[in-house]
Image (cartoon, rainbow, N blue to C red; front, side, top):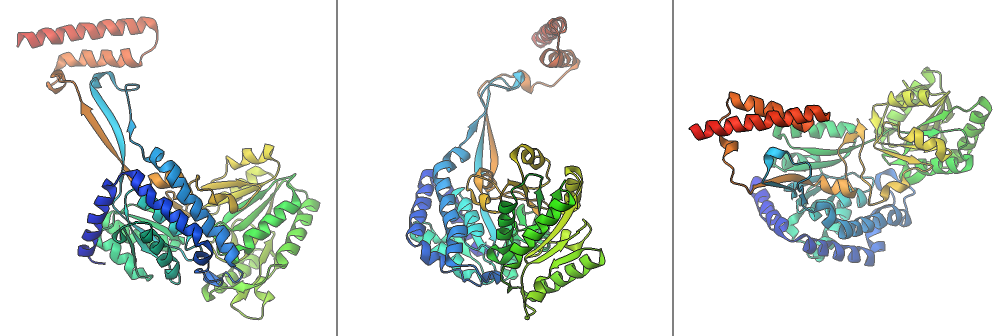
Length: 490
């Protein structure tokens, strides 16, 4: 990526930004229809073994990526104009001394946005970020994760066929060098979906150019199970969260807090869950992930935990693993502190919500969390959890709602993608103020006489009590008369 090429992209972006939003939305509408017509073919570009997700089927991809992508397009068609509309501030709340000044806030595109994609959901995650960036009037550079170039190319082709200028969406090489070169060339914003370590590496590059970013980073998500939770439903949801996409999901459950259960209830829950998780087939894992999983198991044993299920022992091959279930966990364990794309779950028994929240807060990751139990108690707890998204009586699935934003806290990143807030994050506020009066006094130098005027205004506008307000009004009027007389003497 050279600066000369980036200038050509910027020229195309300026024309695109000047294009009425309604015309930009026509491209999104055409894209949605094209994706819908070829939904299966688009899903089939994602291999079933992608990112170690041995059991990812075409149906899985249709449900987890293609359908949510279609809904994201329709969300933009229906809501982009309202979200990006210029906000006129009006008279209410305007300081009295700014009489004659009209203010409005426009949403201006950022310019050229670099999107660094993740390998686990190559169509949905980077795809939604790309269409939101384009809808907001930006040009997009898309660096797909290694192995996901085909999906990025397929979506770009559909966008170009829908009327998008090809220069507005550039596919970069999948290696890290291409992203670094784009940052050095001078992009205006970076959206990264990846691990915390990758986030730190990219932010070091961004610091050199003071380039802003949105960091959607990995998680070590907590699940709180309260008394009264439906055991069968909770177990089924947890099994899904650990099984789906080979557990190569940033929102997969990793830490489980049994809150306020007696020993009999907790033992029953753990037994039912172990049975369900033991049925999940072993999947492929990269060597580095296998090494980390072994370290987690060794650390858990060292700290007195029980390895209820050892996923690595389930398969004879060292690069495959079933679910690893750790019980009697404590917050300091490696499995309670780390992000990992492997089916591993640690269970900690806690006496009450206070202990559970404190144990959860000991983890530096805060992407999402789930709470299972009666709604009367789950809603109260959900509002106290430190996480970007909290789901009640479910895991993962509801977050594909195109209306909601998604983002984490702590080591799980900052900023949001998707939803109205995600679309706004692809823009910058531009404030425009118009002075319609031609008063001269505001340009005059201040004098001692202004002290009384301004002090009186402070009391008049922000004081309380009728007596004090009346005295302040007289104070202002007297100071204004004196200033007027002094002006006439000049």
